[in-house]
Length: 221
Image 1 (cartoon, rainbow, N blue to C red):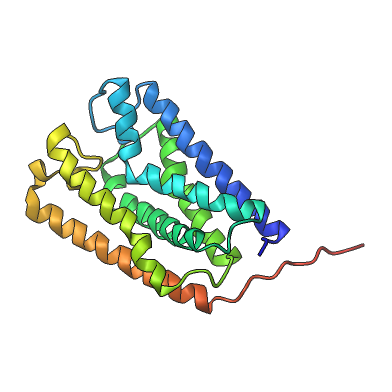
Image 2 (spheres, rainbow, N blue to C red):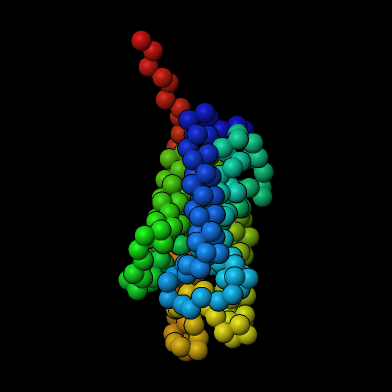
């Protein structure tokens, strides 16, 4: 099923903005900027590795990838796209919420760093969520998609916590077991896990209940 022209344009904008945001932040990282402005500058290679370790970056990449299919009007009927789309919508929503509640209060960004942060944590989440709510496409997500969609954040968390003690670095301060202890980190992880599961099942329910969007016909003179 192909996307409608108006919806395709919005999905294309989402793809373009998400792609630009990721590339923009990567360029800043290579130039020596820190995504969180809370850590010392590592080597360029290590900085790039860390860049792709951020859940924020991965969720923005997934938004861009899943927005491309409806933007070109192909591939939205496949099962893999439905799972990836659900993961993208839930993942980018969690990205925005967690950043707003746990990271924004401790950040003091200025200039280009502020703009990159705004794009990654506010503009892209809003575009992705509103685009999904308003434009669809509808009826793709199913309950069976929740488990595979949530496999990515689970694997990300396991890899992050396992690698952290080895490289002595965590992408987010609230995951640093050496500073906050396993109990505190576990509580944060459980709270975020509840948010993930709730959003995933909520998204499936909404996808079935929201009306299919209709293309508004242009007014002819």
